Image (cartoon, rainbow, N blue to C red; front, side):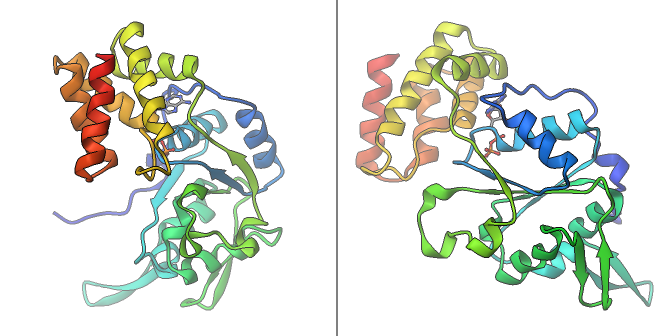
Length: 270
Ligand code: ADP
């Protein structure tokens, strides 16, 4: 089957995504958007950043183009490249160029994972020039007025290699994300997974226990995403301890002792 490029129309978020605000992030994002300021979402994995972007795209009625950055991601992957099609050389826009032209919201998830040239290519887009250099075409693409750039970054990894440079971060309005408060997280887990409130509360307690182990054997505690996964398994009939093992413990560590310790925590609760 031949693949085809999706048009920006196909990236509209059609129905309202379920999103529980944890602070003033909606108002700040909206104000940043109106002022054409790019936004940086800081926070650990699985705490609601992607869901927030889906919600904002729906609210602002803009298409959302998301790119998950990885260590092989180059500027060409974002901007575009020449491809041979039917014997002819044609230019194909990358996702960032498509968003810039169409006035979409482009969300570059985990930007520090990308290669340096990919990070640098967003600089002129992220200041008041709002242009995308298309080196291979020898042109500068002026962003559509509705275009918005958002990036995410997890400051918790604390590695020089995975640090966001000041020259990059100082172009963005930064929104800090963290796991929701216990009450809110219980509500989210119950709503997203279908378990009752009492069970959601236990899962949240379990998450807090694992989060307290961060830095003493665990890189990260259980995220809201993992609680939702465990909740879904439980709602489908899996025993809570087995669900916590598969959806949470095994997802956060490979260390046998740590797995045993996390299992102890789950047996004390369920
Ligand atoms: P991130 O992008 O930060 O890694 P996600 O946005 O994918 O995390 O969040 C993971 C899951 O957690 C979501 O799919 C959703 O089920 C749930 N979630 C987290 N925070 C919220 C929130 N504030 N409102 C609604 N759902 C949330």
